[in-house]
Amino acid sequence: MKKIFILGASALQIPMIRLAKEKGLYVYVLDYDAHAVGIPLADEFLCISTIDTVAVMEAAKKYKPDYVMTSTSDMPVRTVSWVCEQLGLKSDIAYEDALCATDKNRMRRRMKERGVPIPKFYAAYSVEDFIGKSRIFKDRFVAKPADNAASRGVVLADTRNNTSVKYLREIYAYVHSFSRSGVVMVEEYMDGPEVSVETFTVDGEPHIITITDKMVTDLPYFVETGHTQMSRLPEIEQADIRRVAIDAVRAINMQNGPCHVEIKATSKGAKLVEIAARMGGDYITSMLVPLSTGVDMTGLCLSSVIGEPVDLTPEYAHGSAVRFIYMPDTAADGKGSAVIKTVEGIEEASSMPGIKEVKMYKGVGDEAGPLKSSNDRLGHVIAEGADADEAAARADAALSAVKLTYG
Image 1 (cartoon, rainbow, N blue to C red):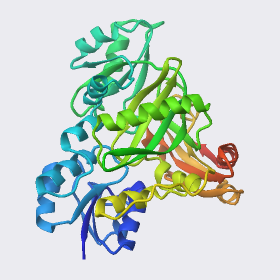
Image 2 (cartoon, rainbow, N blue to C red):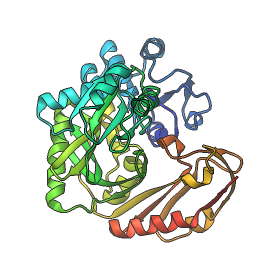
Image 3 (cartoon, rainbow, N blue to C red):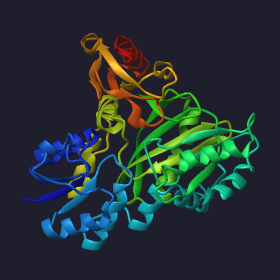
């Protein structure tokens, strides 16, 4: 029996774990969380951090997996590529290129070298460096950790009305606390709607599966609150987005497998926000893509890893949407967090037309906080429809039916 290491055992990894089992593979899941929800679905669990390359390597030497992969997490992409290179296993992307796909400083430099449209950017290595580089931007700029994900630590700094050193130091301290390397990116704020592009590369040739419209929180944070397929942007903008996405995938030298490409359709044309050498999270690739196109990206990824042929042909063009449940800022009442007192409307929302899933991550008695990263979301609803408009309307209706109170 062939053996596989799947790095990560959270809810987003469950579809891959299940599929690997269905294909007859002996599945090891690796995660630092001994209570991760995907653990019971695997054959064996190894309590190892997915970003601890040395520990994963030692485990691979011991258990000798035929394949090593991850599905929707950023940093494990580095681990997978490094371990595969060291052991001579098939890898979708070289380690040096994986670093470019997981470190925003390297990513920005690579894209600039390859001519991919990106925002103006600087890397800051200290608070003084940050303050100096922030002064280059006259009104607003985005500050983000160079090496984190899920919108953690990403914030808009608005210096139109506050140019004090104290304000800039506070911004730096917040962002720096999320940076593993200590590097903080200082970037041009880009206007316009944001989308994600799901791609799949076969033998070095990238193919676009679909474009997803993205919803985010009000500024100063950039947390995703929903996604809708297919994109409803004008075709001329979508064509520009597709061009930038393909160029970005080629810039990181992806050889096989998925990429999740985030792009802003700015007034000056499409510009790259970020690229990840993995499937899109937030149920975009595991649920929305199959609902809207019939393309099973989870299946494509696993087939590619184990050497099976892949078929990227869409079966149809429908609509799908996810909306996330989160606590409004007003519920915290100035205290920074609140406890969930009641959750109502789950059954009503689940029974609405086109609703595929209603799920809560937290329940009564759990603490909730303002939406500053994806980890602060409390649940989600997923809907399908004949087109994007119908799917979005159904998801919004179901979201409105779910009522939470806080205390």
